[in-house]
Image (cartoon, one colour):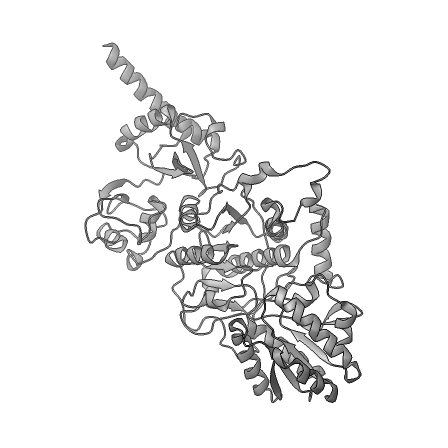
Length: 585
């Protein structure tokens, strides 16, 4: 009799908990950092407190990070698996059949049979792949296994975000859940924003060649953006705050500061987006290393797939892994810093923010044609492999513009020096091995040669800003040589928008912003969040927008052929005047 009373009491307590919280624990688990957690997708009206109580826990133990105090529908809350939570889940699942869900739908667990796919399972159960993935976070066509248990809707039952009959069981790889707070320890922010660019006057093929299969956006009331980047939060404890070390901020002595300005640039953009009414949900995932398994686990465990956009500040191999995962989920992924054109080849969901070599050369050829029409161009290099693509593009564009050019190898420096003295305003394009140290040595030698021919007003051109950034750069020599270059993220204090960004950044972070990190992060989030907010997922098939207010640099996205990703071809050419870089109009 006592045993029966105890069981009855437990059932009554469980019923009371569900009645008070309106939450029925699902029992779904995941493993993060070697520990097991229940995970719960937040619904309207739920809070961390009510969710934790439904799982038999105090709210302070209910999440991985204590900064998740305000949650929105679609967020994910992790709950430690322990005796208390296990008992609460067991009681709730025991009553599952008697308790309809808030949606009025019922679900069932099935076992995957040999040969089944997500598509065939969805079709057999009268539902969609997206709905199955919503009920089973982390499930994709690639990791589906025979014998695996899946939660699926009961056929004929009403479903959340139900599709029309023609849309049921449409093949898809993406997911429908919204983004979550990651293991980065950074708070999921809300913000708001504006759009950007896209006219094509380069002769390249405009944006999408043919309509792509683009999945719907996560929700109409917010833009979900995931960011995977190395914040190295686990190494924060190594930082010393003594008077001898406080100036190490931003230096590579501490890895936690290496890319911090990228994160800070995102925060400035969030503020601007909020002011313009764009609600952004930011999910920042801290990637401590570039190991393939680390990337895959972080991608799966932090709900990255449930985003409208992924920004992946990762090194070569890490980005390749993230880009492939994103492609599987039809999730567009932006690479903020890579200049390698191959990252867009074969993956239509990759967006390369940094301009391509072709875009840089187009800008420089245009500037030279306008300012130095009739001048002879000398391409100087060493026949190294990493020069080949740039050299071929220079030769192609110069020929197309009827500009005579000659290639000189560095081994013929004496001959080149003699020719420079006989030419009127010769233009020298320095292609020499884009390795910084080699470039530094040879470029200083080239500058000396060109300054010796100063009566002929020579012009030095580089595709990048390596020369100007060299520690021993002689600005007087550069100015004497009418130095021209491309600088995709150069912050110009004379530009009102740039000055406003610099001032806002300095006021907030008490340091100068770095264009490569802070400005790039700012523009990427501002542009794409605004675009998705205004046009929805359809925007990806026609990325044509006017630049949003506060945008620092133009953006023109082009796709060269079906099956490849988008590249930013908008770039500005600069000339050194009065020891400052001035945009060539």
